[in-house]
Image (cartoon, rainbow, N blue to C red; front, side, top):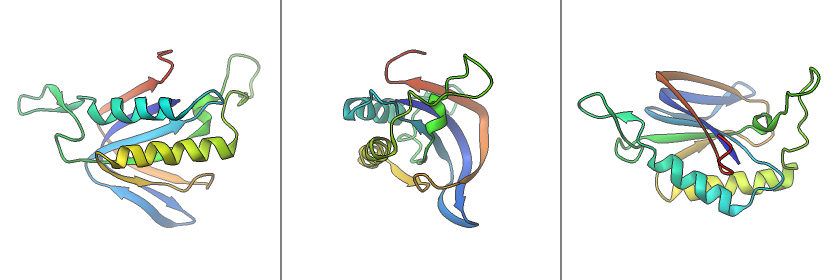
Length: 148
C-alpha cells in the first residue's frame, strides 16, 4: 500500500461539480492499494500517517502530528500510485489491486483513520477533482512494504 501525504491549509474534492469532501488544516492522503496488500498494510499506514510529526510547533520545527493540531484528513483512492513507468511510454497497472480488493482496503484504511482523526473522502472509482493549498510545501511518500 502506498500513500502520498500532503500537508495542507485546506483541500476539497468534487465529483460532477459537487463537493463530496472538504477539510481545513490537515493532510491530503492519496492512497494506492496493490494486489498483495492486506488489512495489516492499511493498519500500518493509518498508524504511521496519524502520528507523523510533520506540522510545525511554536518554534517552527516539524514536531506535531495531525492529532496534535486537531487537524483532519482528506483520503483519496489513487490506483495510479502503482503505475509502473519503467518500460515503454504507457504505465502498467498490473500491480494495482482489482477494484473490489482496493475498495475494501481503502474503506478499511479510512475507518482505521477515523478511530483517531476526522476523515473526509472522495468517491471510489469516480472521476474526481482535488484542489488543495499545500502548506510548506510538505509532501511525503510512504510504502507499507518500506520500498521508499
